[in-house]
Length: 261
Image (cartoon, rainbow, N blue to C red; front, side):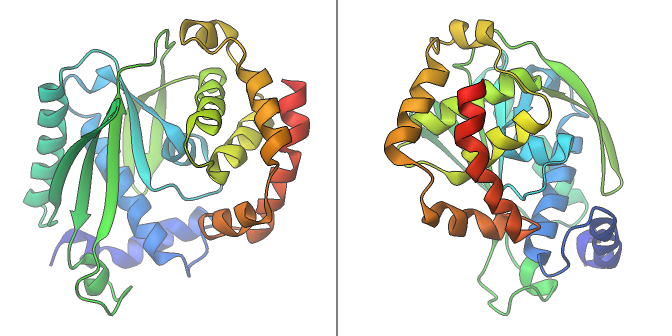
């Protein structure tokens, strides 16, 4: 028995303290594993060259009230081999604790990916009755962002503590607006995250936007919003990731927020 199974009740108790609905146990276990991965990663040499960004960083480091599935990083100067070595060492340490992990890697466009798959875990925790279902965490990293002004945040969740490198919120909102514009298919989570970042006092770092050829970022976001709006389907798509379903309504503020940036 691995320590996730033996400590399952303690993990659930932590999640109660974080006001996560108990029926979202699949999300709770994924978040626990994400937390374990992040704290293990940032205990390793050279990890300071990886800046933790994206929706999961907003959840784990800053407390946004939604689940996020992927671990996204800006690579600040490591080779692909060095990144692979970091991931492999984290997986090795998981294995020492009896946690079975399958690792698959791939390259798509400008990003590199690792898929971590945890066989049997959901069945062992009685979260699923399907013995073939695997919990998955995707890790991706890219080198194309320029001009980051990184900061260190003390992570403290599920009994794990670590100093974690990330980008400041004024740069994260630029990255989220860029994601809103550049994805082939608009993701409602990008809209929600921009609204949430704005509520935390974030203002786009225009110097950072300029360094990444995003000078008219806000204007283009406004133009896209005029054409696309926020369809009803976005609310349904986002709802499973939120702790409170009514929070989907915050996306209605997106238009006013974009016009005020």
